[in-house]
Length: 190
Picture 1 (tube, rainbow, N blue to C red):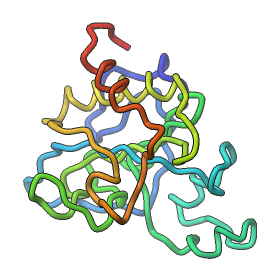
Picture 2 (picture 1 turned 90 degrees about the horizontal axis):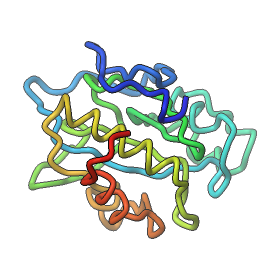
Picture 3 (picture 1 turned 180 degrees about the horizontal axis):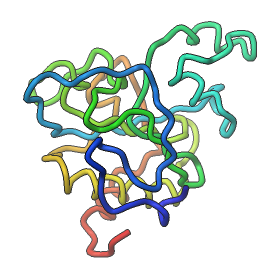
Picture 4 (picture 1 turned 90 degrees about the vertical axis):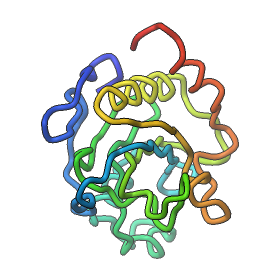
C-alpha cells in the first residue's frame, strides 16, 4: 500500500488502516501508564545496501534464514521489530500495534528517560547510511507522523542515532531532517 491508500486514523488496537499488517512476536505490553511521546526514525536494508525482498519481514518475524546470506548469520537470532516499515516506494507494513511496545530502540535514552521503547513508536525506512531516501518515503512518513500525533502526545521525532549515540547511526547522513520538518509544518495534508 502506498501513502495514498493509508487511513487518516488508527483503529482501537493501534493499527493503521491501509497498511499491510504482519504480526511480529517481538513486542510486549507497554508499562502501565506509559504515554507515547516519541517517534523514532530508523533505516534498515537487508542485506546491507540492498533493497526489496522479504529479509526485513523475516527478521522482524524470527524467520531469517542464516544460510541465505553471510550477513544473516550474525543477525538471524536477534529479536527485534518496529511498529512500521516504509519501503522504497512508500508501501507501509505494520508489525506491531501502536498500543504495544515494539523492540526497536535497544539501549536508549531521550529527554532524560531510559528505555525509549516504553514511550515511543518505531518507524523503519528501507534505506541505509550511503544512499538518499525516496520522495515517497518522506511523503508517507509525514502522513504517518501526522496520524500518530492525532492519537498520541508525540513531542519529538528523532533518529535512532539521537537516542543511541555512538551505538547507532541511522537514519544516517542522507536523511533530510529539514525536509521532514518542512513537510510536517506545511498546511498541505497527505
